[in-house]
Image (cartoon, rainbow, N blue to C red; front, top):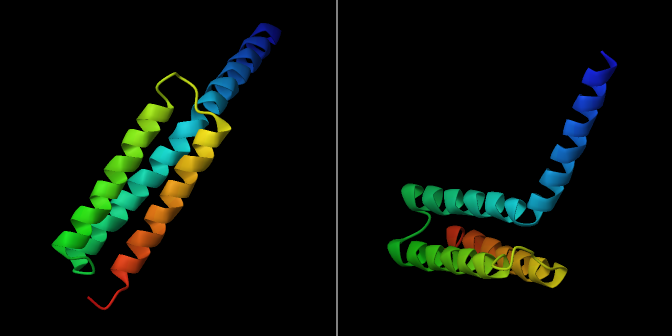
Length: 103
């Protein structure tokens, strides 16, 4: 019984370390998925026209490429994380503005 608890504790510690190492880009990925969903929803409801949709999707692709470049060496630095966060904040504002404009 004691061995089971020790093994379970080691497994938990390893999984926490593994998750911690992956969170640098995983949270950005989740945010990109939700932004893409907002763009699709805006297009389907008519809040976004074809041109606005294309521009917002191009911005999302650019962020995805920047994230891939930042993670190219296997590590995302704090400076790169801050840059990606700023880019996603900017994209978020663009989505909001385009969905709520008077077109």
